[in-house]
Structure formats: structure tokens, C-alpha cells
Image (cartoon, rainbow, N blue to C red; front, side):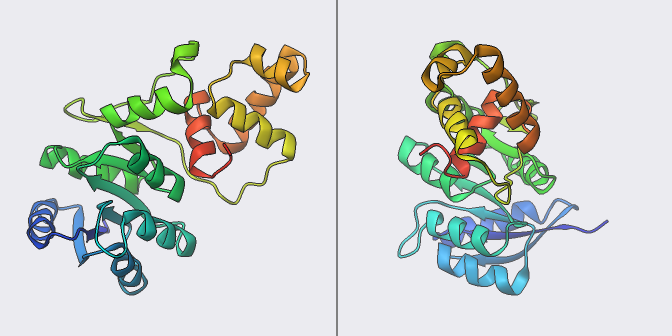
Length: 233
């Protein structure tokens, strides 16, 4: 079985070394390179072609947002899992909008980070549970009663994962973009129907087709998809 090739991007050398030592203890993972900022991570991806980049967000000169955007623009197949100490809305939003496949905080236990890397490599989007709850509240209008649940929790109940894959190659009509934007803003079917002058049944059917189109399981995943691909603007 081929190992999961991981590149670690963090501006603190001792953290890079510590993460490498931890990850290399897992038989399924091999740390192939490390970088001190987003630009260096991008450049080393060209050389080492990792499966997963473990990316810090706040680094000097070229931060994690720069690195995520550059890597995803060049190699959509490379997964980027953020591992940082910051969970403020601005930093989380920047990571997701640039295409991050997951977002964890450095308070996670070693085995949870390893489990998250495996899940991201398998195509799942992985978030620290606190981060996921904040995202869901911000972009799906949880207060409006949508209340969708993620697929499940990884060991330790500290990491939420959902099987939503970023699919930037999909094209959308203007009507579909409007629907995605309203779903991301948390409107329910009745409200969307009123805003777009549609029958509620028509709205429900169109959203069902969007779920199938992006292979999302529910409105939460559809909303995250819209945000990650800039369709909520």
C-alpha cells in the first residue's frame, strides 16, 4: 500500500520537526518535505507532489491563504489541511474560500491529526468540531432552523468530517448561482421561492438537482461548496 505523502508548512521550525516525528510514526504516512511559508510550500509541491499539505495560516511574507490558493490553482488533486492556532471568522473564511479541504486547531491530539490526514486524503472535508459549528452557523443560517448534521465524528469526538468534495470544474447557470447564494445565506425553500418568484415545489426540485450536481448530501454541504467556490458572492 502506498503511503500518504505529506508536506508540512509552518514558520516555526520546532513545530515542523515535531509534526514530522509524530506523523512518521504512522505506517500509512510519509512526510516528504517541509516549508516555512505558503510560497515555499507551493514551490515544494512542484517537486514532491504530496497528497496532503498540512498548512499553518499565519506565516511571514506568504501566509497560508496564499499557499492554499496557489496550490489549488495548480494542483486541484492535492489536499490542503489547515493546522493552526487561529479560529477567528476572518482566518477560517480565508482558508475555506481559497479551497482548504479541512481546518484543525493545534490543540488536537496527535492521533486526531493523523486520523484527519487519512480522511482528507480519502476525499473528505475535515474540520475541528468547534470550527465546523461556527461555519455552519455563519453560512447556513442555523438560527433559521436548517440544523443539518455532518456525516460524523472522528475518534475523540473533536473532529467533524463531511463527504463534500470541491468540484471547481462544474459550471452553473445564473439561476443556479442565485440559488446557491441564497442557500449559503441560510434561506429556506419558502423564502427562496418568494425572493426568486418561484413556486415552493419548483424551488425544492431545483435545490435537489443542485445537491445531485455537486454530490452533496444536504444543504450544509451545499452551502460549504458555495463558499469554497466563491458562489455565495
